[in-house]
Image: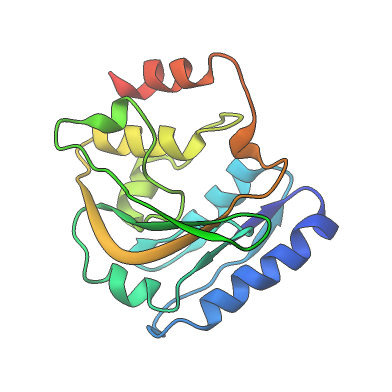
Length: 185
């Protein structure tokens, strides 16, 4: 679970995320919590340090359903898209249908959440996350698919907290086209 930048901001959020990991029904996992200057290098540090077969990058402002890891073991694919639930700043939950296009729709839009389980060996062999201001998870998924990774699904539930001012709402002109150009073709 990576955090970066302002510890005072991320601390309380990370505690909620940690509690969701500690509540997992599947207990055979390694938790690596690290803090750094930027999200890319912090995620890469944890991913390369991990020793398990699978990686799940849990953003500190998100949560895992208590059966997330157990259900993820019963999924399929090298990258396993979980079910997604959004929680707004008032705690209102909304289920979002997820979409996996057998025709390679990942090149057109990022529908795979950061917390999707991914095979560690593929992550390491790919060199991990690249340096993008946003969409770095999408760039990773595209890079892995380009090198033969299969997309699949799991019944695990990943809870995204849509907080005001988060990076996902950041408008970085041209970044989606850059990601597509680097990895999507």
